[in-house]
Length: 411
Image (spheres, one colour):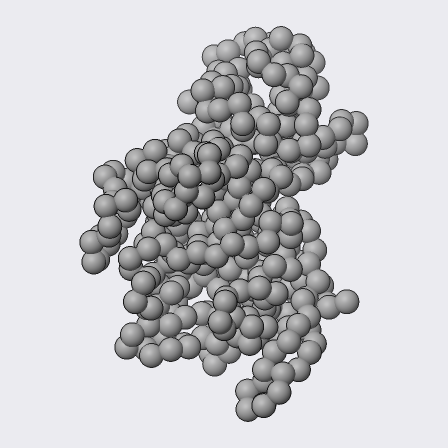
């Protein structure tokens, strides 16, 4: 499948992708767009001018994708296919229009916004390599995983209001911590600010209170995915997380990529999960391929350096998104369109695949050597942390773009 719009083979947004997002330009108000190469397709104007058909045109001029997604996959999937048909190299309907550039907004001139209004947010803990590494650091290395970990997808309810879009600058958080050897806590800026390499899915189909979603039907309730950087203050976390878990160490900011990549675009990249042992309970059992082969990378940069420090993959997940959703709803917890559920830190078995500074520098004991001569045990002020993700096919890739944030000093 080829488009009449020209783009490089390395673009994250070929005609095979067609992700959705919310954007403005200097001359256009907020609206729904889709990415194609280095352009954003103005969907509302294309519908108004009869190049595309859509049952609820007003939805394409809203501030978020929530109402668009809520129309259901029968509607949104057909619309995505219609867009692909319009952009196909053999379709001359728009291609022959001498004014076609008016429907194509340059990404370089656009401002991107939160793609959805996040109703609720859950963060899972579903990478066995990450959980094992953390267990080795903080507990018995011979019994790194807690007894429940292989039996259920562990998760916690996070703060939805502090999820922000890529490009948002984040101030270093302040809070209590307990220095090594101290007997009383201190207050101040976190000295162990970390990133967490994650992927999040967005709920696209609601359920009623008391209703459960099976693993088999889970993907009917998932609209698409974004990259997710769950920023974490490790020193604050270590002091506060007993007995209930993450709180101030996690709720100051999480950053997502602006384009929502649909499950349809990622379907060709589904891969088998690793065998789960011991055997899971019946409601978590699955048949088929429920993981995805998505290359993931983390880059640290500032005025003096730019260095890739993580090269991992989403396929390393022990618990799949389908199992996460099935477990999340097995007790009757209801879902809303726009709910966001993050994977938890994604780590692989090799050191360069570790998805956090906590693991890369092994709790500060093995500093990372940077190419400007500095070292990192955790993030420094003015560091820019960029997450990149894409699935590679023969001749094209399905990507998310970038998920970027700059760390500013504490206020």
